[in-house]
Length: 128
Image 1 (cartoon, rainbow, N blue to C red):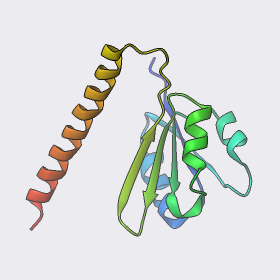
Image 2: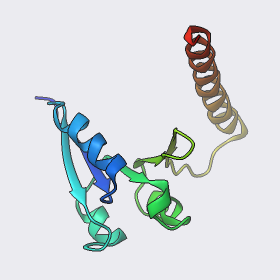
Image 3: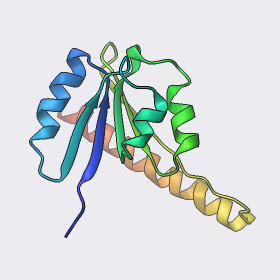
Image 4: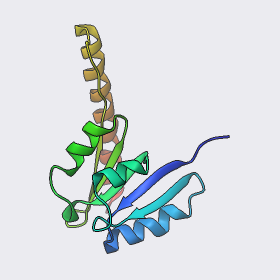
């Protein structure tokens, strides 16, 4: 049986409330809300999330950096309502890479960027 992805919405903004309504209907997700005034980074990590979604205006700038360093494999999604942007951070901790392995990491990132640019191009072509 496939395990549900645990998604934590960190905050209580209107943007996150709308996202909560949308994601909670997805049976492959376990969605929880944590109010930052009720719990800090340790409380957040204790919930063992796969993904944390937050409003970029309601957290400190170092928030995402601290979390990624403390929990490898965590995906963070910041919503910037002013710019209508979704910012995605993911943490990988790699050690003792050979130059070939480092090159593979760089190429993998480049492939991801190319895919993102292609999707953006296609999205813009559809707009009137």
